[in-house]
Length: 288
Image (tube, rainbow, N blue to C red; front, side, top):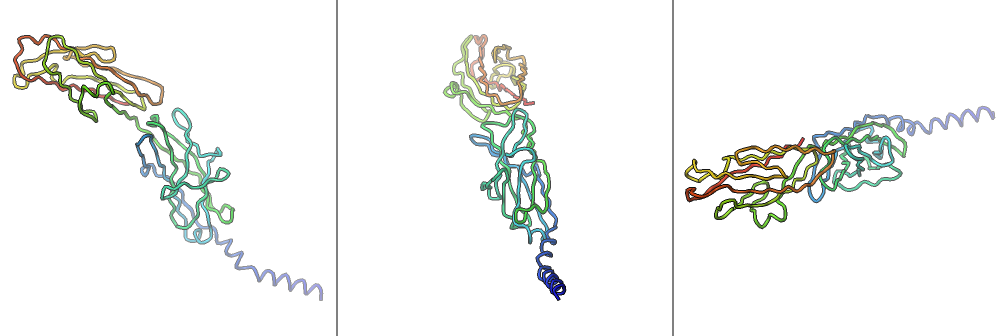
């Protein structure tokens, strides 16, 4: 009789738990974690901010049983992006750009929807040095702190070569205009008169500069045959208005903010027809 009672109790235990076992076995749905570079958001204010997308999609069966999404770096305790000059450290944000809490190197977000959008945020004090920034993370779907599904994904941001040209502070009282279009009023033209001004170039890569005159000198507004030549001195190189200046600037990957000075020196203006003279001088910067 004792042996029979033992068997009956054992069978009764098995019959009391089938639903719990079934729910655990059903937690085997599908998960897909992606990061589309075309969805990257860039913001340019006092410093550059980049949001790199992480999208996690789960099947209905996985949504019904799992409770959290975990994101962690593959190699490090923090979320690290290797870059052309230095490593950058990212923080994780939710779809509303609110910071997701991190604990023991794991960012944890509740699983409440079939599709969950997150953003890895990178920041730099200025332009990002040109080149690729790459991170490697593990995305997991979790139930009661147990990993159900897991996927490794690469996060990539490519910083394009960029330049920004602005008027130097010392020139703002003498030169009008902004955003790369400037106007200089030389006033009454005199022999050998000089005019000095400067610009600042901010770049995240090496670049080439070309200085070129449209009319090869100051041209009369109506008498196009009347031309006053002048010389241009730029960054210790001097050319006449009829020539083109080409300079190449190479530097190690990074960000450089450099000041360049211009000097205009007029030639002989005696016996030139009265009137207004004008030239369109272009300074073009080609990042590379």
